[in-house]
Image (cartoon, rainbow, N blue to C red; front, side, top):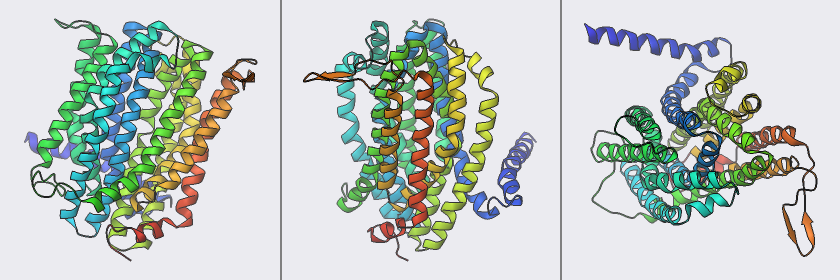
Length: 492
């Protein structure tokens, strides 16, 4: 009886959730079948990423309560360096989902397994040196962005420990994206449903020193994340060495397949450069925020964590677009690939618009949960982010379709242009006469004294440029030629 009851509850929840694409279909926004397929793939990704971001939000919430603004600022800066490694893991895993989806679509499952192995080797090649670098130079790296001693100390301590889990983070990203490419977005969700609660509990215990545990502050947050990443990595390893899934890690057999490894790199490199450009572009942006005040930087850190949770629909539909477009191309159906890409973009934007409205309306109570030294600034950041999430959803869905086709350069162009514009506009927020650098008697002083208005404009303009570039490229259709010229998957 309990099993039947739980089954009915699960069925009722799924019926309620899938009522959303059905409602959009009735309004003529999406095709019902295509909307269901995109939503079915996106939902587990949204939930998985949402739980992960909730854990990050909880980190900031607990650190803000326990230690205050300096610790939050240090956590934000340390986390941005961690994001460099995270960005490289996204590069490798983006190449993985592109290659695996096309191989699965072409019916070449054994080659998809080989692609997973190539991605693992690439992950180790990148993660180990970054871990060593952070261990040796954590404080000087944080000190490049602030001269606040407390922020440097807290950020360096966090960075040194959290980077110990980078190898596991790389592997979990690659394993999850390989399963996504094969059309399985649920297994990664189940793994995260186990590991994220572990992360949250460990963070609470180690940040506050609950029970016999010492109060480690930001270092406790880092250890909680590292242990959870290791647990997730080992879980994926245990699952994928079996033959229970549509893609698997075969420990024996050939270890290197240069043509497949090159395709992972070819697709992943521009996407990695995209992520690194975006991440590295945050450092001068954080410098500007820090110049405007630690309270401004802390408010941005809180709002950014919340918005990362709010943009989970865009992440989910971006993955849907990659899988659906890649599998259709692998099966040799370019028309179907284009159709599914546009339908995924439509449902993605519709979902994100609803989230944006809710976020703007609930900004004040959300910020009230944090011990922010500048709550009015955090609320303003959240509402600006709410404006920007619509172009973000457009950019993300179009990028997903391009990634599925192996056309990765234009997202890089979009991020480069958007980041450049963000920084140019943001620098005008600095006080008039503020000198960034001086060389050969020439001073660089871009400040116009425009303050927070320039910061808000910088955020929205960045995401808008990315949307224009990515959607324009997908609409142009040359991504079909890129897929056609690839040595991976089927041919039309």
